[in-house]
Image (cartoon, rainbow, N blue to C red; front, side):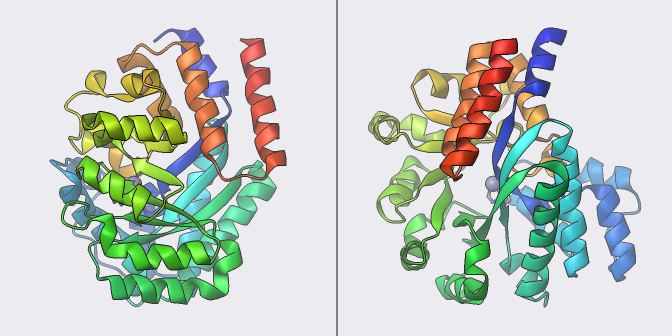
Length: 338
Ligand code: ADE
Ligand code: ZN
């Protein structure tokens, strides 16, 4: 990659719409928190943890992701985790983030909902104050758990309604279709939350249709397998539906064999509103800027493509009109300077 494109990407004002905060837990912090909280880890070193991050599919990743979370116990832990993520992406000129958290991954270990959400909110507030990064927080439902569990979690979130941007759906996709959560999503929409769901990462196009028709989502997370169904592609294009694509994640989880075969460019050319995101950067080997750099190189993307991806991110974000206009101004300023 030329130095020029590298510089262009670095200075591009970027937005991240698909990031699991627990997936930003770096092995160093995992060790520190394990020590702080007296939690035993099945690893002796940071190197050993990194070496374990080889995945053949989504479930192999999820098993380690849930295991890693065990070190997160207190409000301070969640604040430290979130602050570390914001400090890292600030260096890549990330200007706005909409992040997921998985409260069920913590409440089932006895960590109160309040500890988790308040720690994350503390850091998001600091991030806006100290780094100028605006943010939204999305409560994500673990789809491998029963519907009743999801309803209970949404109930627990009610006192924090005003602090939440939306409701998401993640974890093991195949065998847990969106239809399992129709009532939960109906409730969330009734509360005025934005709604989104992971769909078409490993699951079939039918799951994307269900996310649209039954959950009535505002955004699709991943959505790669939509390409197998031309009628679905037409629908997504016609609706201007944002897809939060995660290139390094797709590679690490074997959704694509090789980054050079990643469908991102094809999706752009079809007129899909695709965005670039990091998903779980600690586990997949790169933050948002790394994802931009990786696809720019592997797919030989032009500045026009990269600007379109950044612009799709701003347009797909749930921002006030003022903040959206300000970010588009930043982007246009960057493009004008070349
Ligand atoms: N949880 C964290 N990352 C995820 C992903 N890529 N897919 C499903 N669930 C997840
Ligand atoms: Zn994800």
